[in-house]
Amino acid sequence: MLAVLTSTSQTLPTPSAPSTAPDALDRQMIAILDFGSQYSELIARRIRETQVYSEVLSYRTSAEQLRQLNPCGIILSGGPNSVYDKFAPLCDPEIWNLDIPVLGVCYGMQLMVQQLGGQVERAANAEYGKAALFIDDPTDLLTNVSHESTMWMSHGDSVTQLPDGFKTLAHTTNTPCAAIADHGRHFYGVQFHPEVVHSEGGLALIRNFVYHICECEPTWTTATFVEEAIREIRAKIGSKRVLLALSGGVDSSTLAFLLYKAIGDQLTCMFIDQGFMRKREPERLVKLFREQFHIPVEYVMARDRFLKQLEGVSDPEVKRKRIGHEFIQVFEEESRRLGPFDYLAQGTLYPDVIESADTNVDPETGERVAVKIKSHHNVGGLPKDLRFKLVEPLRKLFKDEVRQVGRALGLPEEIVKRHPFPGPGLAIRIIGEVTSERLNILRDADFIVRQEINRSGHYNDFWQAFAVLLPIRSVGVMGDQRTYAHPVVLRLVSSEDGMTADWSRAPYELLEKISNRIVNEVEGVNRVVYDITSKPPGTIEWE
Image (tube, one colour):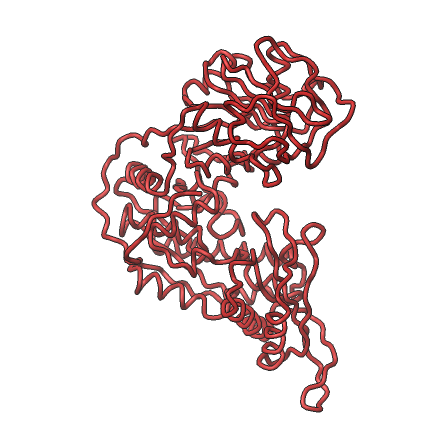
């Protein structure tokens, strides 16, 4: 993980005047060529955990482009293809002449073997899941990796003939060449996935490649990132103005802190209160930024406008579109009132960069221009005549790295550890039509959920924990009187990245406390149920 810097104050220092900055700090890096593996992003995360910078690049990246990037090492990712397929993705064969260490993972190893003169064929016995690794050569790549350690396999092809100069480092029961090396040229390959948590000693293997084979130093830290980001921001922005749509989440809040430290009052933060935030959050957010952090925030009250757009609407997609459209209308009006602005700051993160190849380029300047407000969870696109250049200082970071940067800049834990919250807010946690009455019921129920999991000390055990209001009523009895009121659904899930999730085995005492309080304290609710559906097949949110 990134090194954590201790901040002694939550009030940011007044930034010095913007100036033209030198080029970005030189950094060592590992380049990852992506052949379509579901784990490519995870490889990058594991490299980052060694405090060495990594980037995921297309497998089409040429040897010349790599030479210009000057990485300390190259990793070829896994992928769904077979190297002998007619349209199998291939890397530039000149990569093998760059005199840079290379590690091939699964498909990447097979591609290395094929391009260097070896043979890959359909395996007699495919291997999926856990397998014991029997180490034949414990040096270099496999130093400190235990004999018979468990590794995660996922392949139907195997290496049947090694290229000249290669030797076998390890095997499994079904795979004779589970790890290979050409020590002289620093080419290595593994048939398993060291990046996944199921692979024992996987991180040790990665560290061997990064530190001992590529000879990298652990210089990718919070401190170096912040220093570099501030230099780049000042060089890019100069004396111009920047607009940031503040949502209160960790991404936009960290971005606000970073930008303010770099350019001070050239930054304008706009918080649009659309009426779908959780209880007391808008007031708390604005107060924190204005009074505690001394960062000016333009507070825009627009609750009535948004609620009017949802009158009679039950379909979740229509809700999202109407909220997104109205957000853009308000954003456009307010930005023109407060502007003009040259730049729009977005909390784009590295997974967004990896997963999307869409870039919108200004034909005159060559710079990316905004089409979506990422800091508001992509709720809608900006109109074509409202053009900003983008500034995206967090686009090199993963979510956990953003949290570390937030801590280093003095962001309080209540924001750093804040659970993900959807852009449309409570509007998509009310099934059916959104009304003022239903919003009030859900706010009160949700407030109790968050209050009790905080009191119990279990907040950080959940990826998300929230309440959902159903548009039906059920019979109950309270004080010997018949009731006919709404049920509330508790949704508590555990996850690492939100892509998949499991329902949380929360303590019964916690569930009981939440249920009792909601039924007794929230008018209009007489029943609490618990959602025990994982993702997939369900989703985390109900809409």
